[in-house]
Image 1 (tube, rainbow, N blue to C red):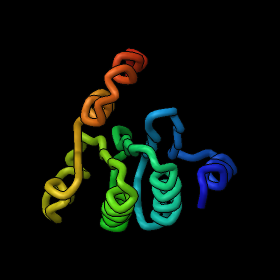
Image 2: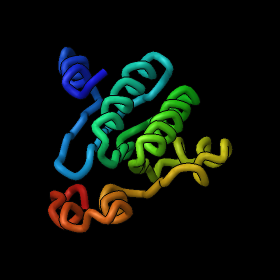
Image 3: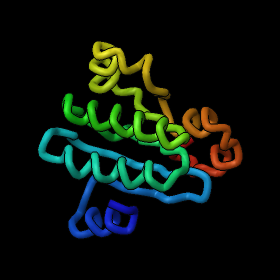
Length: 137
């Protein structure tokens, strides 16, 4: 699935998922309950983001629940990014995600940061971090 197909899939109905294609990075914003029902949609979006070949930031700041299937999708996307020679950064400070990530050993396997500015700093995209709207800083 390429990014235009992903955008079409996610714009066909109201969705708590957003794909932002910036020149230096792809930002995937996820929200709500990430259960097995939405796992294929999220996985497709993550694949499209990674396939752009740029660093990927997955912002889970508005996620209320993440199933093990979603955690697997995060790890699969991370692995895909590494194989493509790019970076994958997961943004969350939510215990609902951090605790299972820690239990599975994924906090040590992936880059996980608490907020979007930290993700951009991790990727050395300083200019983008300073351009964020006040609500995102």
